[in-house]
Amino acid sequence: MDMEKKEKEQAEVVPMLEWYFWLAKWRIQLFGRQWNFFDVASVIVVSVLHCLALLAPFYFNWGAVWVAMALNSISGVGITLSYHRNLAHKSFKLPKWLEYFFAYCAVLGLQGSPLEWVSTHRNHHQFTDTWSDPHSPIARGLWFSHIGWVFDYRSRFGSYEGRLNNVGDLKKQPYYIFLHYTYPFHSVALGVLLYVVGGLPFLVWGMGVRMVYMFHVTFSINSICHTWGTQVWDTGDSSRNNWLFGLLAHGEGWHNNHHAFDYSARQGLEWWQIDTTWYLIRFLQALGLATEVKLPTEAQKKRKALYNKVIKNKEKLGTVGNNGKLQAVK
Image 1 (cartoon, rainbow, N blue to C red):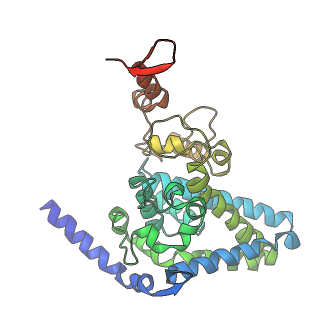
Image 2 (image 1 turned 90 degrees about the horizontal axis):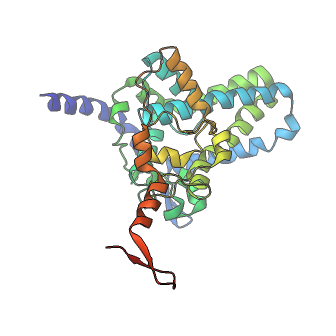
């Protein structure tokens, strides 16, 4: 009975999305591959924002800089706290009004709707470093993992008819459906507001500089943090801890930690690993707003530690003679 009810609920939600996919199905052939509407739109938006950022030296004032920094904090933490740790991994729970507030902050980061972002990220964890990984530098190269995947709808969702099948929990909520359909327009409205309030300086810095900075910091988690850094956990993939992006990306740069314990609300697991997203979650927990906060136990960390694997491998090996050769110990 419960299964029938669940299937009925999903059936009621999925048709609401059908009209959206005619845009995904529209395709043209360019540069040796097919592009759909979203691929072309992504190229245009990213290019325009980069061009806007190039105007920054000509429209500099401190008011605009402070606006850009404030919006970067709001939308950046929105992505890391809401899209990533709350929605994608369910690392903690928030009251609905606060969950929806942080999700809206994330929408202003212009990195996709909640449905798209969470779907892509769940696929990344399910298929890490394989051809089904939407942005693996191992499978597809550094450039593609950094930004090329943004212009390839098919790589993110498996096909041009992708139905975002792994976000059924979000599809059931009308608020996320609304944001899915409308998310670019919220950034357009923000751009208009910035121009009205502060003219071109606010627009150039609040949209151009901020978005280009956010894009490349976020995308570096997919590319750089799977290429350069340290590994302390036995994750079986290329994820790395990178202190620089731990600082720049609100704690997301501790990526090997994250792949080892993807359910954890805290990614900077050591006291010296700065994780500003975790600090905010901890503050919300102290206020009683963040509940069911998930963290790895010491036993879980011990089992996952890379040095334990090295020690176990060494225990299985012995040296013979003076020639330095190794043989398995029976």
